[in-house]
Amino acid sequence: VPERRSAAAELGQQPFRADQLSRHYFGRLTDDPADMTDLPAGARGALAGALLPRLLTAERELSCDQGQTVKTLWRAFDGVYIESVLMRYPGRVTMCVSSQAGCGMACPFCATGQAGLTRNLSAAEIVTQVVAGARALARGEVAGGPGRVSNIVFMGMGEPLANYAQVLRAVRAMTDPVPGGLGISRRSVTVSTVGLVPAIGRLAAEGLPVRLAVSLHAPDDGLRDELVPVNQRWKVAEVLDAAWAYAAATGRRGSIEYALIRDVNDQPSR
Image (cartoon, rainbow, N blue to C red; front, side, top):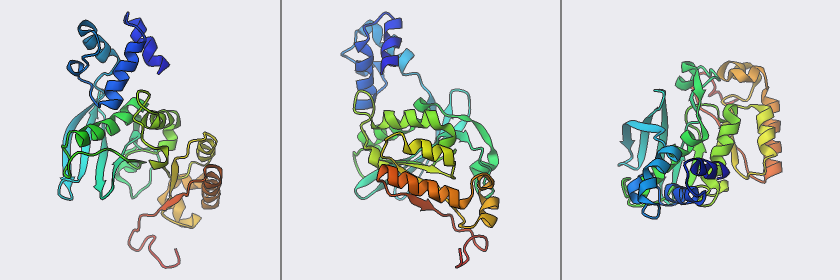
């Protein structure tokens, strides 16, 4: 918020204009200057252009589940592509967001991991994915009628804890109350990781009651070294110890993600 106020002041506007702009973006889910009738007509365009630039452009949408699941392919300002998914269930709507363009974790069964890492996403690019979903829901553009985003999972493209600072800023913007953010409950946010142990410990110390999900995929080091190459640095026992410590520090139950791969990790012993 201080950064937004400083940006408004640099444009020769009163700092509180940034709060008004934020209220439109996070509260009313609009970035159209024409909607911002409480701002001076002559300043709307400049303020919106400076503080709300177009970061992502929807290139393609795919839907299923009678239109209640919608995947969007986004093109960023520099031409990189990312995806987000809106998933509507009875009683809740979950947004699955990307935190990186590509991924550097190189898991062999994951298409994103095999593509390699292009770059980290900014906090604003991450939040934009959620705002777009929230806007579509508010306008009744998603099957099932008007609604709101209730849950967020960092399970799209990228390893969230490898883009730690920007992911943390995004979580705060998603969960701070309007006009600071979208006002989504922190307890409804899940951060997924392949097991970056130091970052798990760092997140535990932040005092944010978000849920942690560990992409395990194999319970033994022999196979996990192959399926999740970062396991060669931090072994299964270390990852699970970090996850238990996170649960103890935050009071939030952790979860384990496991992609069953026929004849690879689906044996009864595993």
